[in-house]
Structure formats: C-alpha cells, structure tokens
Length: 110
Image 1 (cartoon, rainbow, N blue to C red):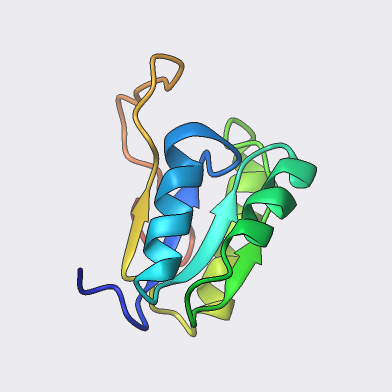
Image 2 (image 1 turned 90 degrees about the vertical axis):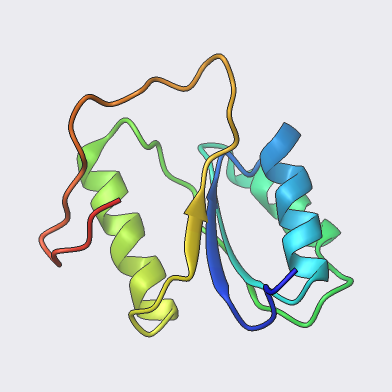
C-alpha cells in the first residue's frame, strides 16, 4: 500500500472496521486522525497503533452535529497542514446516507 506519510481521517474508528483500518493504515506508515463519539475507545485504538511510524490523533465528535463536524474538520486540516490524503468511514448498516454533500466554509467538500 502507498500510505507512508499520507494523512488519513477515519470516522467510526472506535471499533469494528474502523479499528481494523486504523491498525493496518498505521502499520503501513499513514498519519491518522481517528474519530468517533467515544473518546475512551478511540484512545484504546490509538494504543493499538504501535507498529508504524505515523502520528495518531484522537478527535472525538458526533458526526450528526454540524458544529462538531466542522470543528473536527478544522482540527484535522490544521494538523495535516491543509492536506488530507483520504478520509474513510467503514460501511455498516447504521451509517445514514446524505442526499446532499457537506460543505465547510474552507471550501473543502467531503
């Protein structure tokens, strides 16, 4: 994988597929921003990310709350110096699909 020195945001990183992606991506050299609602679980996943050289940032927020989403995005962008290589959310039955794209005042669309 070509993840070395890439910055990746993972929402839903506190368990399941997100946890798995975090450990694999980190092992492959990615810098991570781990997001979910439960900070204690995010810290647990961060502690599992010990086999790679990348930084790991824990950023708890509820993605349903627009103000929390925007604040989290700004934090990630600042840490990544404005560059995010990729962002991913594990697929699960509980993920709701949006009919319109989210836009931040920075002009970044995700």
